[in-house]
Length: 117
Image 1: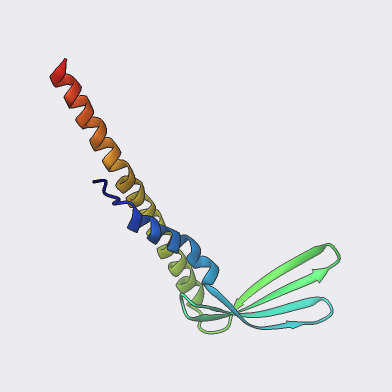
Image 2: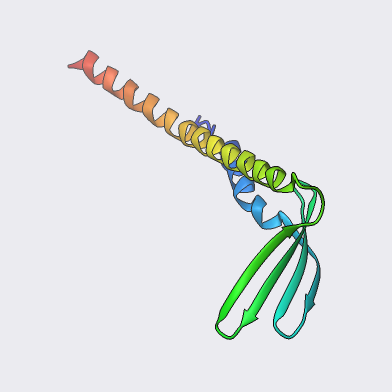
């Protein structure tokens, strides 16, 4: 019977890779002649942000500012860092869980060939 130790870590890895797409919620958007304002909520660090897009011909600009407290950038960056570290760790675990049975099977075959010949 073949055991699939890598299935659960793979499902977890897929979930972690999809998670950033659900991180931000745009609560309000306001458009003027040359400026677009977007108010967003970071669901991971529970902070509010205001993004300002300046539109001038083909050149554009982008400004991001925090709305709540001064330590918001640190909280957002910490949440991103935790996500990156967790995703990397789960990727390594998935890779090891997938490769371990292959390596064990290879070593068993190698031992059997040594004993026969």
